[in-house]
Structure formats: structure tokens, C-alpha cells
Length: 81
Image 1 (cartoon, rainbow, N blue to C red):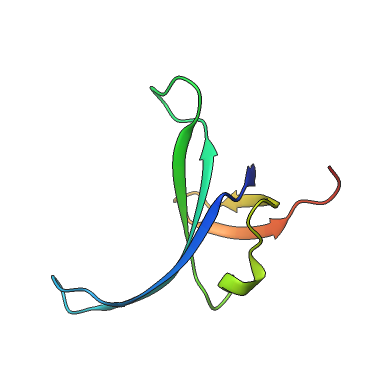
Image 2: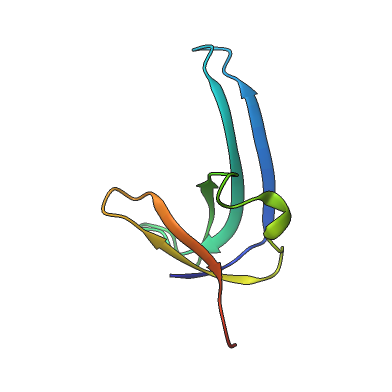
């Protein structure tokens, strides 16, 4: 699936509820969603070890692939147009 990145954030800390540490990159984009007319504002969660915030370009188009459970397995710049 192709997406255009419209925003990004690196979130890390400790959950107040569980006490567990978290660390992820959030990527924002617009895309189709069931029940939405037009496009929905959507978010991907990425592991910063594999997808560092500094390597993600706002306004760029990326190819995203998901596994059978919906987890991101590939996030690479789209070639061509």
C-alpha cells in the first residue's frame, strides 16, 4: 500500500497505567477507512530500531506492507512517481 507521510513523532517513556516502557515512531497519513466518506486520518506505529524518525521524510510517499496480523513488516520510500 502506498501512503504519503503528513506527520511524524517519536514517542517513548513509561506507561502510567502498567509501568511498562514504550518506544515507537508514529507516522501520520490519510487513507481509506470503512464507514468514512473521503479519507480518514490514520496512524502507523513503527519500531525506531528499524525505522528511525530521522529517516522518515514528511511529504514523501512510502510503500507499506503488513503481515497477516496487521503489523508493519516493510516501510520503504516509493520509487518512481
